[in-house]
Amino acid sequence: MSQPNTSLEHLQDQFRAHLEARDRSPHSIRAYLSDLRQFAAWFVEQAGEPFALESVTEYDVREWRDHLAEKKKPATVNRKLAALSALYCWAGETGQAERDPTRHVNGVTQQRTAPKALKKRALNRILRQARLNGNERDAALLELLTATGLRASEAAGLKLGDLELGERRGWVTVRALESKGRKQREVPVHAKARRALWEYLEGRGFDPQEPLPRFPSARADEPLFLSQKGGEMSAYAVWYAVKKYAALADVQDVTPHSFRHTVATRLVRDPGVDLVTAAAFLGHSRLETTRRYSEPNEDDLAKAAERLGGS
Image 1 (cartoon, rainbow, N blue to C red):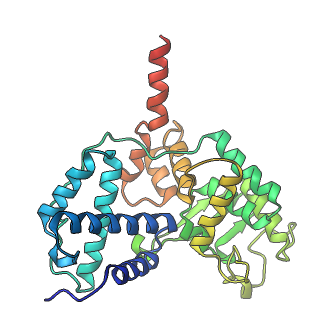
Image 2 (cartoon, helix red, strand yellow):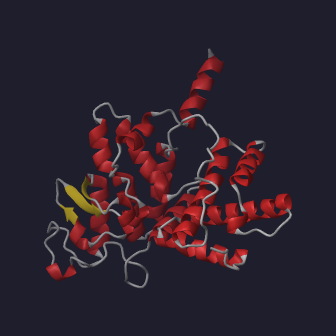
């Protein structure tokens, strides 16, 4: 099969559409496209020929990895390799490349650490900004993310019929994406998040004295979180809301997944919660995914270093 005569710009557009269809966050999409452009520029300089998918060999990828490792952190190098691997996986599926030069190239070994969780004070500042803004939808959304650790796509896809709110208990029914196996799980919602949801739903015409789901069945398929146009809120809009209030709170590097990491960390490190329960709460199909939150994170290591310095 011959390589189609596709410009880098057109290739980027196609790859972007693929990533968007897979519900990748805007931040991840920008990073992957940037990594693609960097690799293409490096390839042209090193190989002395135009970049084309079929022209790249395993040796090129290894050299690219080693070149990056001289200046970049292991996590950064591995992310760029992952972007290239995602590109070739998609290219293979769409018939644009017969072979994957990234297949047998290992990443750079790095110290295993848990994903970064938000500190309690930073999280409270973000939630406070959402309250001060007066947007009841966004306040309810952020409180729900804080309570449940839902993925952005999961929160955006919730329907009114997925919500059960009572005086003493509340649940949301979460239906995962096809990429996650379309599994369904029930996630409890604590009192603070339930109050925020009720405040938002009062503006939608629901009586706070009547516990959900006592509403007309015809409304069960309405989105829980409405967009500005009255339709279903998108995963991008969830991402945008989180970034907005994090910026107002002066908290850096926050995404919807930061809330998920925070919930997961608290669950796994709570001696009263076993690993199987934590995995079910988060919707993890593999316990190994959940167990990673028991590993020390960067803040844990920094605190250990400070203790050594003060001894």
